[in-house]
Image 1: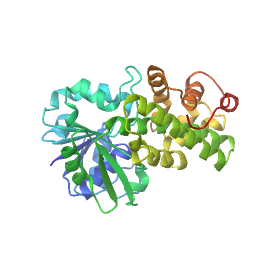
Image 2 (image 1 turned 30 degrees about the vertical axis):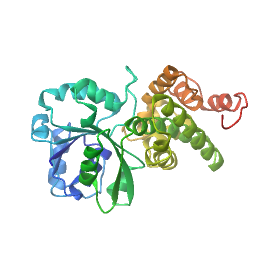
Image 3 (image 1 turned 90 degrees about the vertical axis):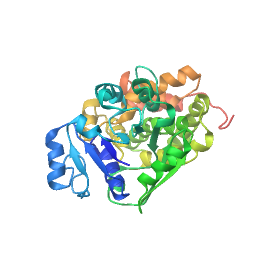
Length: 333
C-alpha cells in the first residue's frame, strides 16, 4: 500500500510520520517547493513542526502528478474550505481505485456538505472509497510519540480495517467506525465549541465555565448529529467527547487559542496572528454548522454565539450575557 499525504501543515506532517512509523510507504506533498526541499534535506518541517525529527523514509514533493502517481491511499490534509478547489485541481491525476482519507474537520460553507460529501461530489468516488480520520489528536503530542487513539470512519468496514493497519503504531491506536456522519460532525462542531472555551478563558473564567461549555457543547453536538443521522454512541466516543475535551482544554488547540485571543479583546486579524497563521477551522465552520442546524431545526446557542462574535460584530462579553440570559429549561428533554 502506497500512501500520499496532500498537505504539509502540522497535522498532515504528523500523519505522514505516523504512516511511515506504521510501516506504510508514504510521501508528503507540500504546496511550496522550498518546504518540500527543507523536509527532504533536514528531515524536519521547519515551518509547522520545528524540532520534530521526521523519518528518513518520508520523502516530500511539490509536484502534484509526482505526489499522486501510484498512490493507493490519498490522505487529504488541506483545510476544509479549500478541499473542493484543491480536489478540482488534482482531479486529472486521481484514479478510480484510490482510497481517500479526510483529515479536515469542518462543514463546507457554500453547500453545508461534510468533507466526505465534498470528496464524493468532486471525485465521483463511492462512499466505500472515502474515509475520515478523527479524534483527540493534537499534532504536536502525536508527533512526539505520546500515546493517542483515533477513529477511522468508513462505511466499508473492511476498508476501515485495512486503513487501521496502515495507521497503527506503538503510540497511535486507531479504532474503526462505520458511522461517518457522527465522526465528521463530532469533529466539525468541537472546533466551534473550542472557540467558545477559548473566549471564556480569555475573559478570565475558570474551570467551572469550561466544564459547562464543554458539556453544553456536547449536547449541541448530539442534537445536531442525531438529527443528521449520526449514532449517539459515536458522539459519546473518541470522535465526539474525546476530541471535544482535547480541543477545548489544550493550549495546543488552534481553535482554543484563536478564541482566547478574541476573549482578550483582540480582532480577528490579531487572533489569526496568535495561531501563527495556521487555520482555525471553527472560525469559518461556525457559520456552516449554524446553517446546518437550522436546516435540521436544531437549537445550537453556543454555535450561534460564536458565529455572532466571529462574523456579526458581537463582543464576547455581550455573547456571554446573551447565553446567560436565555430562558431557563430542564437539562434533559
